[in-house]
Image 1 (tube, rainbow, N blue to C red):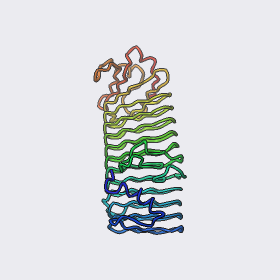
Image 2: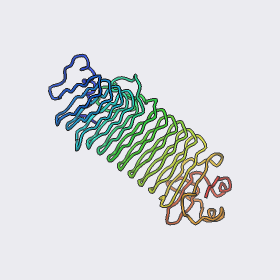
Image 3: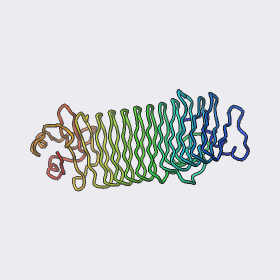
Image 4: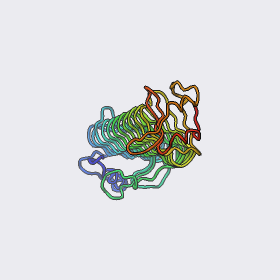
Length: 325
């Protein structure tokens, strides 16, 4: 993404000493004070130094280094450019526009420094949101995960419309996908992930995560830790990972599959749904062995609300399932 201005961050970082920019960019410097900076319709390179700055990048494919301080950066009203915005140190709020934007909570072209407790909003477009630092090591002007260093302060990332990719910090983050087909990747920490309305992939890591499926056909992966995974309205796949996980389902859940339910450690939570189950016998009567996509397992029929398929289990395992209803 950001093929039109991906190299501009590297150029702008070099400009700190040379004070020169490419001819097709407008260079807008800040100061060590609290600045208000507003770009125009051109492709802007904006460098704000220290201070609590407010920046409006404007139209075009813009590159912004907000520097240290608690900064607020807007891509610009109705901006359809593909922007790169790096918040720098301290607690920043970054807003993307209608283009395919890359929002970096920390620094660009260095992995050092404080990232802060950042809040990133992607907006429309296929955006990349990173709670951390980024270096374009291979020089392809594209975001690759191995070029990112996750931050060490809890952050909030919201993708918005479009097919977005979100990468959280190593602390307890809040990640939300929005309306596109999004990928949400949390780091270590007790994270909360909202898949949104598209066909999303939401991945936890170490820590006790809570992951909510949305309206689409989602894949939820809790990772290590004692996680809570909520099946959404689509036909979702849920993988708890290591730890004592709780798989929770409500009304209109769709036909969901739990791929690694462990009767020794995991819990099946049906308390949020009105499924008409008054006893364990009612749930047993709605259960049967089935084969789905070549996999054998235990199917629990939820009637009009959908079903839950527990891969690898059979009716003989029913008595060992920890059930909440």
